[in-house]
Image 1 (spheres, rainbow, N blue to C red):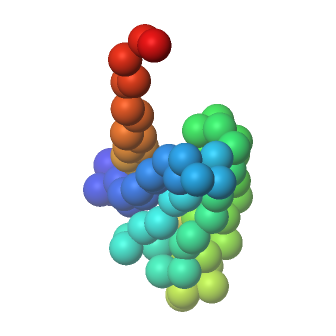
Image 2: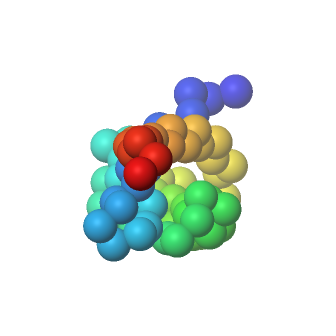
Length: 77
């Protein structure tokens, strides 16, 4: 099995979306409301971007999504 492509996603609390980028997939930048919706977008975007960057068509691709979210717990009033 080939090395998986790494995709990083961070929660943007200000706008309420997950934002994904990857140095392994040139041009990848997308966002979604949920991690599940983000994965669905990545499943179609990654092959398209790889093909646009010269990767052979029809090759299966594995990706690893590294999602990170920071929250602050506020004391009860």
